[in-house]
Image 1 (cartoon, rainbow, N blue to C red):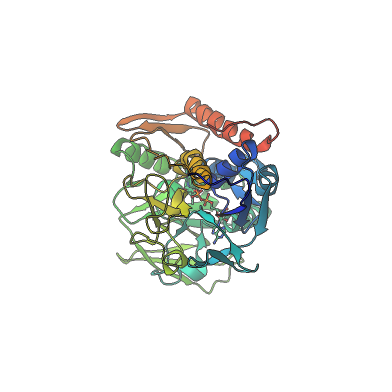
Image 2 (image 1 turned 90 degrees about the horizontal axis):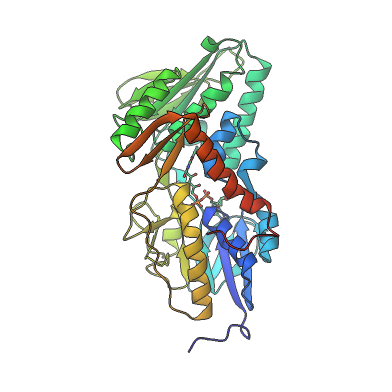
Length: 399
Ligand SMILES: Cc1cc2nc3c(=O)[nH]c(=O)nc-3n(C[C@H](O)[C@H](O)[C@H](O)COP(=O)(O)OP(=O)(O)OC[C@H]3O[C@@H](n4cnc5c(N)ncnc54)[C@H](O)[C@@H]3O)c2cc1C
C-alpha cells in the first residue's frame, strides 16, 4: 500500500544546483508535493547554463543571461537553500555532511554536482592551471584577463587551453573571439590548444572533428595534436604578466601567460568513500530510473551519474534531459509508486558554437558546416531554455 505522505514529513535533499536539479526544482514549484521538505545545497547563489557559457566568454551574453538564479528558483519551489558544499555522506544514518553547516538529514537524496577536469597526475597543473570548473572561478580569472588585456592592449598575451574535447575547443574559440577585439594588433594574441589524441573532439563524428579542426586553424589558434601536457612550471619573468612553461611528453615546450585546464571529467572522492557504487572514475552508477545501484533512496543525474545501460558523454544537454525523469522518479518514490525508467535517445542533435556567431549541427553521421542560421537556431533554443528560469510565476511544465 502506498504510504500517505501527507501525514509523514519526508526530507528530500538535493546536492548541487546543476542542470537536472534546476529542472527538478522548477517542476516541484509547479507541482508541489505536500508533506515534503525540500532542501538544496549549492556553494553559490547561481549556477551556469553550459549551453550559453562559451557564448558568454565570447562576449555574446551577459553573466546574468547564462546563469540560473538558485535563490529565486528555491523560493519558487519552497525549498530551503544552503549556500554550502557537501563534503561527505553518512549513508547509514542518512546525513549529508557539509563544509560549514551542521549535518543535514534526508529520507531521499539526489546528487547533481557536475564534474571537474582531472589534473592530479600532471606536475604543476593543480597549482598553476585554471580549471574550467568550478565555473565561478573560471569566470573570475577570465574577467581579470579581459581587464588586464583591455588596460594593456599593446602587450603580447599568450593563452593555452589544455584539452581538445568539446569544452576545450569551444573555450579556446570563445576566448580568441573576445581577446582579438581587445588587443591592439592581432599579432599580440597567441592562443594554443593542446590535445592528447591525434584529433579534436574524439567523441564526435569524424566529419565534426574535421570541420572543427579547420575552424580552429582558420582562427589562428595554434593546434598541438597528439601532445600530452606533462608539466607546468612558472618562469621568472621580467614582464608584467606571469609566465609559465608548458612541457609535453614529446619534449615540446611552449611559454604562456595563462593556462586553462579542460581535460577529461573527474568525480570527487567522497562519493565512493561514502560507499556509493561508482564506476572506475568515481561517477555514481545509476540504473534506468536514475537511482543508485547500491542505495535505493539515492538518485544522481548529470555529469556525476553514469547510467549503466546507457554510457553518455558528460555534457550539459544530457543533464538537462535527465531533469524531468529525475523529478518524476523522486515524486514516485516519495508517493510509494513504481519508478519509471528513462531511456535516453540514441541519436541526438548537437549544435556546437564556433565562437563567431556560427554553429555546426550534427546528428549521428549527418553534419552541417558552420553557419549563421545554425547559431540563430542554437541561440533560440538556449534563450528559450533560460527564459523558463527567468519567469517562475507563469510556468507549468518544462517538457
Ligand atoms: C568550458 C566548458 C564549456 C562547455 N560547453 C558545453 C556546451 O556548450 N554544451 C554542453 O552540453 N556542455 C558543455 N560543457 C559541459 C557541461 O558544462 C557539463 O556537462 C554540465 O554543466 C553538466 O551539468 P550538471 O548538471 O551535471 O552539473 P553542473 O552544471 O556542473 O552543476 C553542478 C552544480 O553543483 C554544484 N556543486 C559542485 N560540487 C558540489 C558539492 N560538493 N556540494 C554542493 N554543490 C556542489 C556546482 O557549484 C554547480 O552549481 C562545457 C564544459 C566546459 C568546461
